[in-house]
Image (cartoon, rainbow, N blue to C red; front, side, top):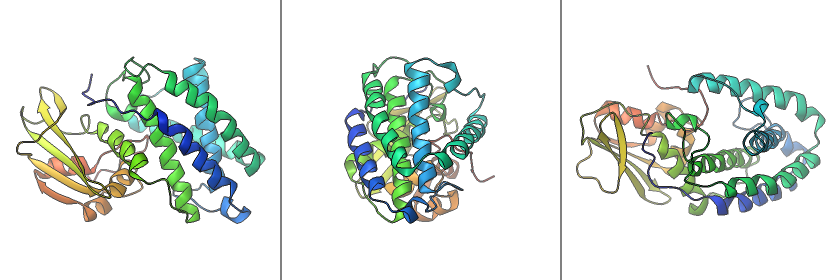
Length: 281
């Protein structure tokens, strides 16, 4: 199994995130519900309907073991294509028939069952494979943390669409960034044992993650000696790059980089969402 570092606890963040989302959506007017979001072709209403779908699929597939809720794929790119098609079908079919008010009602109703399910999972037990983190199965804590990042990112996309920033305090932002760094061990090219790389967040808080080449892969280590490559980014650029809201070139433009160029580029190509790759050829 790929080394994933120490566990991340996000259980206490689900309820306040959903409550903040419902308060935001509840205050929108008709025009704002129709605003375009960073998700191509989707309005705020479409994105909220998608979040309903996310909750339904999670409960049906993982809690209830309903086979129809999961998608089969042999690669991350193939899964991204299949999931994009499934999401598009759902939004196209449901959004025109679901009012904003009922969308909010459903998100409010689903909050309790989905949170109960997620926080009730044994964090250390093997659970669903997190496709962007390398070969699974992976521990439940990573799957639950991934679920929080999904909700938080879509929440931020709604806020961007309507010009109402929020929920970007360190309490919420740091676990998202921390979770996304767990994509690095499966993303970095092989190097001789002992080679180190370091990814640094420089604002609005400071934190670094060091990985060391070991055997066929990379492991997280507490301290760095002399990293062969260093990438420094604002947290806002790191999370947006990980979900492809920022291009490789845009991330490179705001990053501080040093050392082995191939390792630098691999860190800048971090992908921690089921989205197509856009690494430079």
